[in-house]
Length: 356
Ligand code: FES
Ligand SMILES: [Fe+2]
Image (cartoon, rainbow, N blue to C red; front, side):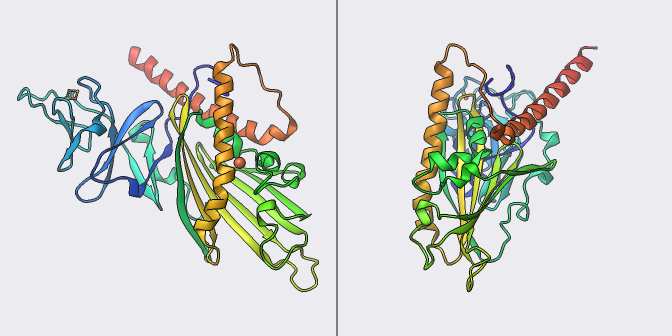
């Protein structure tokens, strides 16, 4: 499905953020991942659990049930399941068939993100998670906070596309964090097996509207704007503003620095979750910064919803008229498509060997 090949939706064998860690407790919570409901809760010892959110008996939402110790009890007829997905009791009969079970998902907690592995549990590998070093969360002098969570009525790749192309700052966010140089400065791109990086170094440009009146300096600045996309749904960004090096007294001085973290998770084919976190210099209050960032984040969400509405209402979705500036976003899509193709190839080989 758009913007991927027909039949391709999302990478399954991957970690996705499905909740903030403090959202999960002793009351089951329903979220959706890759078109399936998931019930999230914590065991009595505090360990997070993710199991299917659909009772196999009559499809009742399991997150509307209750916990009995570490077991999840369906609220409809009382069938219970352990954290490993095995059925532990059927009130109407003494025999519990071994095949009566629900799916259990591997879970990993990092900082305040709760990550769920969406595919084959045997392939779950925590080494595939972005490390704190890779996303620069171990930097001294910064503090961080999780802020935003939304279920958005737009397919996840529209948000990934948005974050892979920061030229949109110049227009969509012209009243806050954007300036013309976000679109006109050449992009420097880098690719590794784990991530795709886009970097723009803007030299001697006016300050973005939101920061134009801050600090005791109002001259031109050097601005760095960078976003690292860790496949398939996590973006870690840097935004730094410095006084240009040729300033007689304050050359190179850092006058603003931000870190942004966007986790984008496919919930259903036409909706996604968006977890936003922010980092700033310890001297900058995070709440105030977030109040400002609510505006551009809201603009991104509104744009994604508008595009989803457009493509779902079109009789046929025509091909996009892509430009050289789209090279990076197209590369991001191609990487995800290749990951999906490899998964589909693996499933086809397994089905073929099972049939022989
Ligand atoms: S639907 Fe869950 S026990 Fe019947
Ligand atoms: Fe944006």
